[in-house]
Length: 291
Ligand SMILES: Cc1cc2nc3c(=O)[nH]c(=O)nc-3n(C[C@H](O)[C@H](O)[C@H](O)COP(=O)(O)OP(=O)(O)OC[C@H]3O[C@@H](n4cnc5c(N)ncnc54)[C@H](O)[C@@H]3O)c2cc1C
Ligand code: FES
Image 1 (cartoon, rainbow, N blue to C red):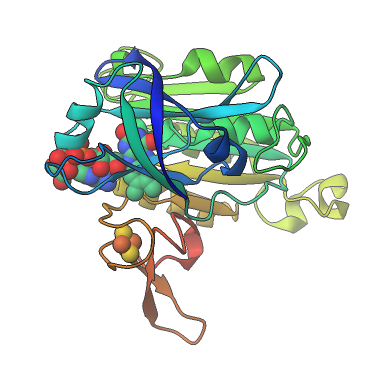
Image 2: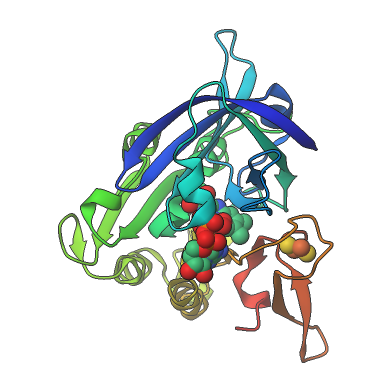
């Protein structure tokens, strides 16, 4: 849907990072974790095109009904700079919800992996997986036994939303490039360590209770810069853990018309073909992508 909605509030949540709350029960009732919205200023021609932002979460009114959506964004350029000037009462044009969203997790342990502002889809993912909130008219249902969130940023001051996700019973593992919080190094080091300790490898090496269960022991949902997602995809493949990547490809239209957002996807008979990240994605099984 295309809709003009009011800003309810704008809150700074980390360095250069803001949470924008938009009132719209329609958007909140329709959105799934992992979907995104194209956002722009109505009537403005510079910038003309909307920009894509993931659903951070829905927010509820006093009666527990979906009342609107939150997005969390990092100021990097023209549109995000403009967005940081918006305040309560300003009106914003939104298309959405767009894209496919994350699959319903079936694994016992869900490993969420974020680099930089790639953390934004994971609050709603964790809430849904824990059975704490239903999305798009689905009833809330607990899906996973455990959730671990590996999250890396340049430095501690860019870590956003920890107070939102920690109370959901999510194990947090943090990394910063400069060592100002958590592991001093890449978030992929945390992923490699977790996979080494928590995935037994070949089925034959697993304890008998694991072999008889139809649920995979672990799955990875990942979002962040491309080199980091490539590394996570390689680790997932080595440890035979199913993995989904949410791509942050720049987009012009957001609804499938311009083909500015294509990525290469492997074909069953060999070779590859293009898929539009805004329609067929932004979430793809890692093994389907032709990096
Ligand atoms: C599906 C999806 C969901 C997203 N969700 C979020 C979110 O929740 N929060 C958030 O902060 N950002 C998110 N992004 C990225 C966000 O759309 C860009 O940061 C935004 O478009 C930048 O707009 P701008 O006008 O401020 O920057 P511009 O002025 O357009 O560009 C500024 C600089 O950023 C670079 N840049 C712009 N877009 C991207 C990109 N997608 N990837 C890498 N470099 C880029 C440009 O090359 C340029 O160097 C998402 C992107 C996608 C595709
Ligand atoms: S952004 Fe236009 S087709 Fe995807």
